[in-house]
Length: 81
Image (tube, rainbow, N blue to C red; front, top):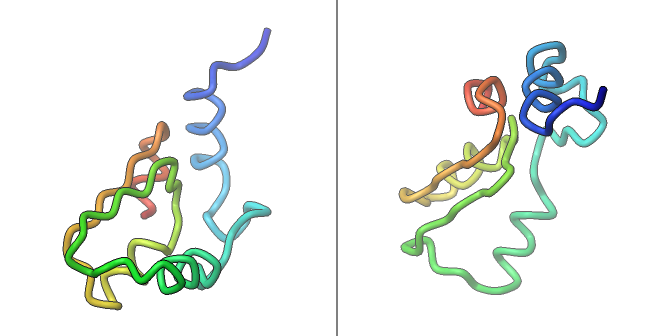
């Protein structure tokens, strides 16, 4: 039997610390560089869809963003974010 996507991601983020997954980045440099390249104003609303336990929201807030939303299918990922 195959897991449903929500069950899979819930299990991943319940069983592992954010730094234990292969896609973890302590600093989200590629995402920040993309925002800088497109000169996105900090006054815009930013939505990180499928953000998981990313550090992106922390980096955006530290950079002066104030309207940031993280959406993810797994509650443990959002709790970590």
